[in-house]
Length: 183
Image (cartoon, rainbow, N blue to C red; front, side, top):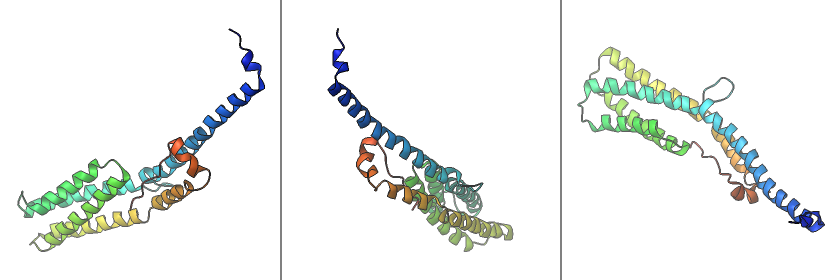
């Protein structure tokens, strides 16, 4: 078999064009995936020795578990508010995506606020009353840290960068997706 067609200028141009056509989307994919991974790491790990949103979500789940323990001392086992808080906590622990974690966190906030309000109307021991107040403070503090996280700003900046030329043309071919915001 003769390979003389490889010695022709037209063949060289076609091969070069194919290589460029493949390398540009591949380059966009590698660059944008690396940038997305860095932003996503903010969600899970935080920045500069700080903690990410995931850490605060775990803290909120732990506080909700403690709140459930106190609530079970005063409310009946089949109580709807107990079940709501327990299922909200479970939903957050099983949430896989950032959007699902956000929705589950909102549900946990609502269920915890309802439970705290209800427990404040019960005849709690002084110790349990202090626990409930501390749980309320802990939940609010973790939510405040989440609200001040730089993840959403960084994710929005990343998503905006996907709208600029030439990435906006190549992102579909390159398999690059926008990041979910935690809001």
